[in-house]
Length: 87
Image (cartoon, rainbow, N blue to C red; front, side):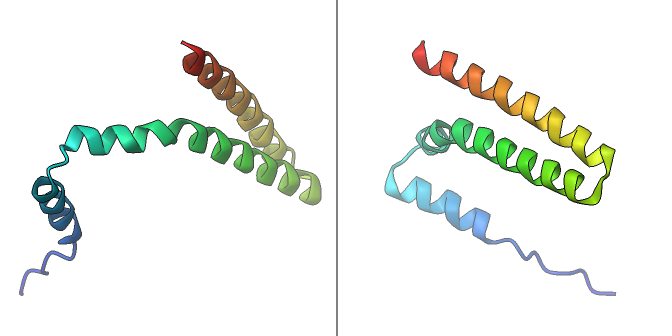
C-alpha cells in the first residue's frame, strides 16, 4: 500500500517567501495579530446573533442559551479590547 503524498506544500512556500523577502516571521505574525482582536470580537457577536435568531425561530431554549452566552462573551471581549487599546 503506497503512502499518500503530502498535500500541503503551501506552508513551505510561505516560509520560503518570508525568508527571501527579508521579512522576519515575527513581523509577519505581528501584522496578523494587530487585526485579530477586533475580527474575533465581531465574529463572536455575529455568531451570537445567528444563535439567538435560530433559537427564537425554532423555539429552542438551548440555542437561545448559547446565543446569550456568546453575547456575554462578545461584550466582555469588546470591553477588554477597548481597555487594551487605550493602554
